[in-house]
Length: 137
Image (cartoon, rainbow, N blue to C red; front, top):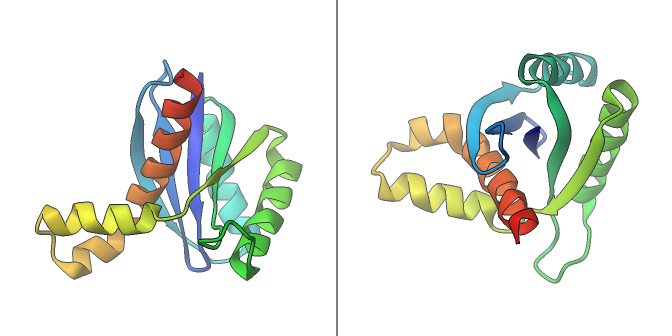
């Protein structure tokens, strides 16, 4: 069963996919947001391509665990996604995933302009891998 991981932002959506056994997450791409209709079409295309059965979306919580304005945007996006794909959508706490992704890319000595292009895909990979690790236990 393949699981899709998403890191939904205002300008981009990071996309990751699990291996068929659900052990590891791999980055797929970063979608540049152009409008909700096109964004959802691109995600639906990925769902079909990989035969996805479940979606994990990063929920950006504040450090104290509360939900802020960005969380509301992600929840609204998830509602629209659910309407078009009818798959289970799991919300996964994404606090510090972008920080972890940034740190990893800096340690790999990647130039900031290249980091900017892949950071959301790496963050989606962290979100999905965190979920996969949690369900294995």
